[in-house]
Image 1 (cartoon, rainbow, N blue to C red):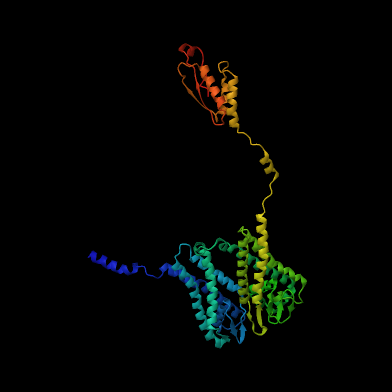
Image 2 (cartoon, rainbow, N blue to C red):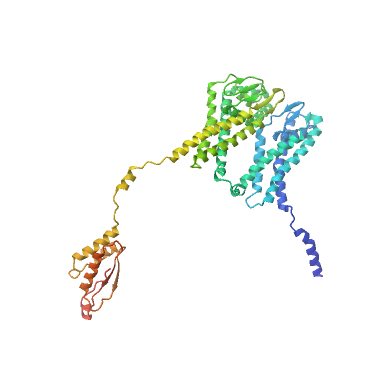
Amino acid sequence: MSDLLNRDTRRAAGPTARVGPGPSPDQSRMLAAVAFKTSGLVVVIATTLVLITLVSVNSDLTGTLGAIAASWFAVHLVPLSIGGTSLGVAPLLPTVIIGWSVARTVHHAVHTATDSRMVRWVVAASIAGPLAVTAVALAVAKDASAVIGLSSPNALVAFAWVAGVHAAASGMGLLSARWDSLVVRRGLPDWVRALVAPSVRVLSLLAAGGGTVVLFALLASWQTAGSLLERGHDVVGMLGLTVLSILYLPNVLVGALAVATGSTAGFGDAAVSLFSTTGGPLPPLPILAVFPDGPAQAIWAVMLVVPIGAGLLLGRDCAIRSVDVQVALSSVWVVAAATGVLAALFGYAAGGNLGTFGTVEVTVWSFGLLTFAWLGVIGSVSAAVVVWRRAEPEPATEDSAEHATEEPVEPTAAVAIEAAPTEASDTEPSDTEPSDTESSEVVAESEDVVEAEVVDEVPGEPVESHTAEATESSAKSGTDEPLEAEIVAPPVDGDEASSSPQDGPAR
């Protein structure tokens, strides 16, 4: 009976014990977290903000779902149309935060021991989850179009923007987690792998330079920014304008950086560059106070220090990683090209159509080309100078010259070995006997050089003649090698041994 029960148990447990081609339960939970963690947080935050906004203005909650769907599209840079007004300028700050969250999630889900199949599942989950939320948002936007005037965006454009944002973010997270296996073990040259640090440095410096330009522009037009903020009338309105200004801060930063490189940033009819300005209507947003009120000034040329400084730093970073000037220059131009492409992409993402105000944009092609040119030219000069200075031979110092002209000093041990036989030849060993103190001093001075051994006397040979022969042979050798000697003690009679004390064995 027990055998039958065990057989039935094995049959029941057999199918569950098999490992199929799909992920395990733990892996499935991890993939679900990768797919919907960031997307769920975005939906929750958007829902909270929409509800707070509708309640604060004493509005009903009729178009809540449509507003949430519009928020999802806006943070993924999808162009919208509300009430017949095109809204193509989406804030970049939420998009950057979403990308950072996705990259961090993928980085924690993938490590060096993860197999390639699991890596593909993680990347697919990080893109499939947001696409599923986008499909739901498209359906909600289509249903809410009759209530709040929200037109459902083009499905292909919406899917493309969402997939692009999440694919780029997951790729960054995967690259940071599997750098060794994806890049180092692929056999890429060392100078290509060494370009990561200079690229990060130059991008950070450009971003910091753009932020510095925006900060000084706001300080110069602080009164204008304050008057625009007062148009909110109450606390809720002023808080909303402040939040919008913070959300659109990266867009303004990209425009300021474009102006600093020599390109043009435009807001409808208004445009600004290093050499000219054009006036036009602007929306009452405090951050837009960075636009100048008057004509271009000569002091604006100081903004060129941003691309010049970035180029100098890039050339230095590439030069200290290679002693070959050709490799350093190649590294500079590769990083400059990649930075120019990124500048053009960010310039395109920061702009768009803004209804009656016109098109908000930077001149994308000139922004990317000028960024590439500044970094390439200035970086090449900087790299060449650094490599040339490192290749200069160091001048010889006076101390090294003095040490080179000094005569070589003969080792002390060799002098002691050569002097010992001479002293021994001048003094007869039978005349005087060294005291215990003198013997210990001699031993201390020459114990590292002379090796001695006390043996019995050879029968029939006087001690004086044996000692003299040993001394003469040592003097004739004249070599610097350690001397091996044998000191033979004379035989003593029993009476003499009892009547006179003996010194210890000499070495």
